[in-house]
Amino acid sequence: MIKMSKLTEYAFMVIMALKKSDLPASADYLASVTGLETPTVSKILKLLKKAGLLESKRGSSGGYFLVKRKHEISLNDVIVAIEGGMSLTECAEDDSACHLTQSCYMSAGMKKVNQVILNALQSVTVSDILDEKKKITLQIKP
Amino acid sequence: MIKMSKLTEYAFMVIMALKKSDLPASADYLASVTGLETPTVSKILKLLKKAGLLESKRGSSGGYFLVKRKHEISLNDVIVAIEGGMSLTECAEDDSACHLTQSCYMSAGMKKVNQVILNALQSVTVSDILDEKKKITLQIKP
DNA sequence: CTAAATAGTACTTATTCAGTACCAATTTAA
DNA sequence: TTAAATTGGTACTGAATAAGTACTATTTAG
Image 1 (tube, protein in one colour):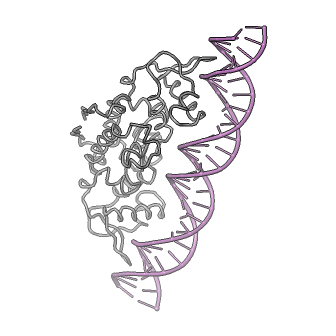
Image 2 (spheres, protein in one colour):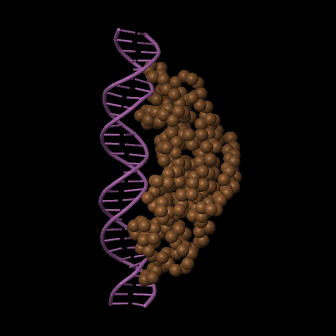
Image 3 (cartoon, rainbow over the protein chains, first blue to last red):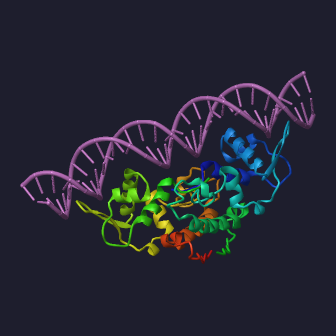
């Protein structure tokens, strides 16, 4: 089964747990709210920060807080932050990644498929995922 | 990086190598054509057969042959055959797969995103991937 | 100064992936 | 009828990746 890693799933839960308030939330607090282990939450928070999705404040009463609203964070943003993105094949994003390039001609076609999937992932935001009532309508252009 | 497994990539190469003729091609022959190892090709062929994408004939001058045309085999068919499909999260296809169902509400939204990706994978055929000149135009409906 | 919290690194364990090996069953062709 | 070619199935091994854990340094508020 092709799927996102557990860590990425957890990342959505962590983002979910972050309120829009400017008060930083500690890794410990987020762990207790989500039911995940603190080190796991901590690892996720660092990756999300590195990707610019949230900021942190050190020291006592420090913690993490979102710098974007949930409807400004796409599914793709989170996937890129945690596992470096999504691409059906290596060659579709880097032609030199395959030593069979000479005998294999999937690359061009795969790129197009990847683009479609990428568009889908970019069109859906975290807030879309959380709000079950909102209809997700996607406009995919080839 | 979320991506298909190597075996799935190889599966496309193997299908590519199969001519539309009714003459069966042996695993050995397909290995030499694709540059892959025979046992690897053999494993792929068995999975593809199990999924109904091709048939086999035993004995001397036996081998494997396609039962569908390449434009009738979708990207999704191959992914399902080799690795059981694609679903961003377990919960999106099986609610019982997650013990956090009580506290996590991604499921409904994820299902929608998965549906979009599934549509994309079903809309593209093997022959689309191989023919670089053909424009892939997708009609995705929410 | 002290407590609380992030930052960073390194390590361990579990799971999956990729590849290999072997033998049984079947069919064709000589 | 016999031998060679080929699929069918299972089991195994090593490598790569993922997941979780542990420890220490750094920063900040009070």
